[in-house]
Image (tube, rainbow, N blue to C red; front, side, top):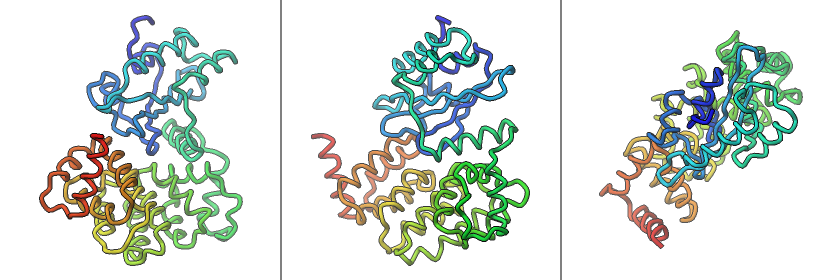
Length: 347
């Protein structure tokens, strides 16, 4: 065990099956080979949040009925690469707590050591529920007892005003199984009738899923009338959140380009949803420039700075953002905002 230098190696040597999920932006499965490159500092972490990589390590062995989950937050360096010292320290804590059998049921003392280490974090309730749904679906395990109630609710049989028995875990189970049975057809039929206490958390659940084309189109159809009505920016932000796991789909990219090229004002919630969740929809120079121009006329300089710095930390966005800085057709407002940003960074 003294020769272990990466989390991936630790899991493999323990003969565990495992999966890695990003928990910082959304619940996104990381390809094992890509995570190994991140661990070896060959590539930057793809989904940084405030200079951190927030991941869930889900692992199990044949003798285990249920997987174990570690929630780990590891700092990144200024290039977005995983901090090797912090990663090594985390591995040392695990080995100290569990020895060479990480698949054992930890004692109370071991559990305390695992949870009190400086790299442990607790995701939001929505993300915990989504991860639980995704893992159980992928491992072909039964979903929660709340799932059937959600199926009944979205079928319309209970009446859409009778939503009080709906649980977040049930919504996440439903979203993770959107292809099952009549789930998609029932949801599409119900979308325009859903009350806010159901619609909003449903969108949070859908953001972590690849959606069928019919559902993508249904969500886009709900969003289209809002492009010329800035009184429903909150509803629009939730629709974008629901679509964000499909940001690279051409229809979603078209919708977002229509939003940021429209003359209507946008509130901060919509703008941050685009940059923080749908960034792949603007991962090209023209779209990024449109977004920056929209941003600069809708927010204060401090907010512009914060969103810009968050975007430039994303490896998929950084090259296009740097190209936008040099575009000759930038507006005077954008030139001024960028100038103030860089003067503060240099200062």
